[in-house]
Image (cartoon, rainbow, N blue to C red):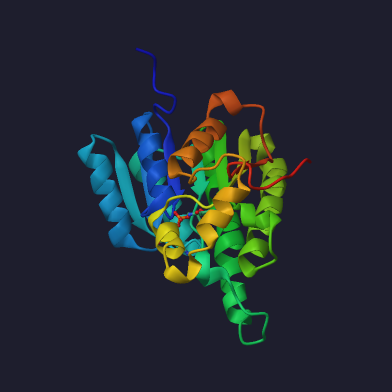
Length: 257
Ligand SMILES: NC(=O)c1ccc[n+]([C@@H]2O[C@H](COP(=O)([O-])OP(=O)(O)OC[C@H]3O[C@@H](n4cnc5c(N)ncnc54)[C@H](O)[C@@H]3O)[C@@H](O)[C@H]2O)c1
């Protein structure tokens, strides 16, 4: 039997208490990794850690807000102390759906700041905090969770995800000397619980067909599609890929550059 792809690796997943982050955690664990679930919702993080432990995996739940540099530093220290280091960081925590569709008004500016703080500076905060730990292992990988919305409509969400794509390039260049590759994944709408609850609101009945009919591959995107891309980008097979954001949207976005 061959060695699992991520045997001996430690993977930190922000926002791993639900949805896509939870799916990533299960898939990395199934391929041999130890997992840190760092989520603002400790109850959710604990539930995922219990699921992983029940399957025989080593995992740690940490309450952490990606916008709080002190909490992020504590997460790194606790992970290194408990699991021995960090090899891979998944910057997955994000504000999305109706929470990131904001008015273009003065009153909405604090909410805009919060979206940019979580979705952009949160990823930067986690990346810089994890860098020494990943470098100490001889290098590793970071994934930033973007969205196809980055190439879309100019909403607060879209602005934050396009900024995140640029941050991916900047971090990739900055961290390359430590052997750290930094890439992004830009999904279309996939079947996380939160996204499906949003989509299934009767007021949005037209959105599902509009999205699927706009795709070249006409089916609902799945969290498993993202996990396949994420594990590839973090693996040795992607060792010459950095600074890229990969669209995983069934061909919805036409981007010939
Ligand atoms: N679901 C989709 O269709 C879709 C599409 C494109 C991009 N994305 C992106 O993928 C990521 C995950 O999406 P999802 O649908 O799984 O989200 P979700 O809302 O279901 O889960 C997000 C998790 O992040 C945690 N979180 C939120 N803010 C946090 C913070 N400040 N610090 C730490 N943890 C925090 C939440 O507690 C939750 O457990 C997001 O960045 C989102 O923008 C999702």
